[in-house]
Image (cartoon, rainbow, N blue to C red; front, side, top):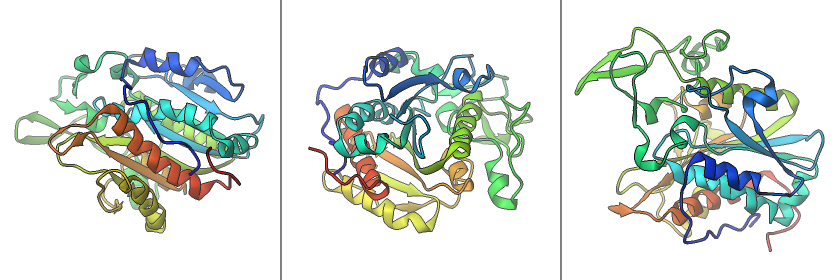
Length: 319
């Protein structure tokens, strides 16, 4: 065990402001709360509604030699992952092994990529997005999850181009539903700006040093679904299985899945950069009923603990 994974059973989910209050409440010198647009000096690296996307770098090093990148909150109803990302900060700071790692390495956490929807309470978040009147787009399926041009990048080796295309896919199309049961391709190939911003942040981390791994925290919000670890490279199957097994000590799980048909996701983007990457797909239902938030968070922390144990030589265990 690298981090403790127990979670307060009374944990509640608030808004983006509540999450930021928690991040800004730490006085540990390892905690550096930043915004993507501010850090990279580019005011285009914001959300669709021009909101800054905050993240936290955890490190004591001036020039970290390696980085772990955790992202969450891409889909509006999947806030178990977002809360797990926020919880992770305290669990890392309380871990002797992670304290040793932070002396030379870094953990970067983007707790809610989809800031526009996370700024409002859960019951006000909109599951659809239709900025151009071209039909109904299921926002939680194509907003902050999809990344520019990765389908083509992985298929034919043509590198994605972001410049000047902040609201659009420049190489791959999005399919929308114009009316129930009728699928059609949009005339414009668009995507939200936050995908571009987070891609730029990752690329900066790659340029500055080795990225040990990335983990994208998701949930499948349907009854009967059990936790699953998704990998995009068969070489990571065993590591993914170890993460699944760790969760499986407490919760029902599915077999680790090798994803070959979801090349437009953030995890596929990381894979295209040669980074070990995992999608942690939590279960927000316990059978047919809703799962408590604390359990949703704990699933993610259990899997993250297994990944940290694999990638970091801490020399010690969490007390």
